[in-house]
Length: 116
Image 1 (cartoon, rainbow, N blue to C red):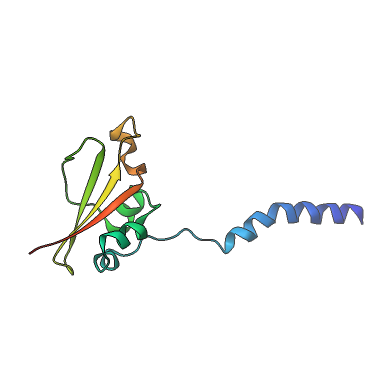
Image 2 (cartoon, helix red, strand yellow):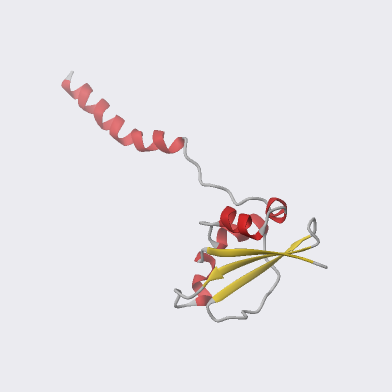
């Protein structure tokens, strides 16, 4: 009986983390069309906490944009519904090797730009 109780206890300890993780899921990057409909401030809040790789996985590759400032990386996405662009900005001031660390950057801000 003690052996059975000990095995059940061990099994419970091993399964408990799995059972609690089943209800959790990572937040998903909002679709680009949802971001297009937001203000720049709301879009920045919606993407706060996501990393560049999360955005790339959700929206695909951005247009190629040159860095205009040394401590800022920007990705430009077409926003056809909006008739403009969604510019996602990442802070690069803390990275040492931009070639290998770019995809780990956190979103710093979002700028919604329209034509006209």
